[in-house]
Length: 159
Image 1 (cartoon, helix red, strand yellow):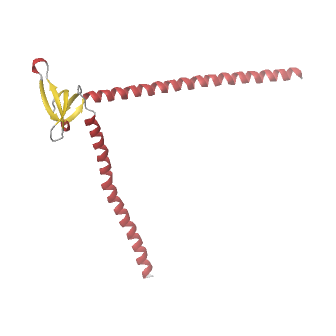
Image 2: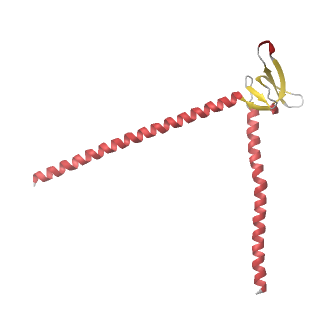
Image 3: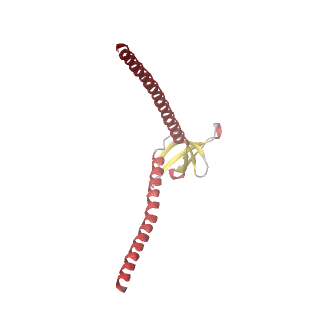
């Protein structure tokens, strides 16, 4: 009997060890996956930079990209023009200093707004079609009832 208690206790201990190991693995793997996704999105933003984009750097400098270059060390650089009129200044930053690309953000917002408008239009169209089909089915039901009534009257008149 004592041996059976030890065997049951060992099985329970093994289950708990497996559960704890799985929890530790999940706690380490999940952040790595989300970091990869975030890094991929950041790289896509940096790769999509183009001359003429309006941007803001991490330091708060706002301007328009006038050139994209590559430094001898291999780092990508962006030349930003800021100011107005005679006060225009050009500054060179690494693309890693990018905080926000206003041009791409505006394009994304416009695209999302367009998609939303299309969905709403499709929804209204479907509601209109549904309403029309309901009205048509009501008309068909009325016609069928009239035909049934006419057949009943014809049957009654024959008797």
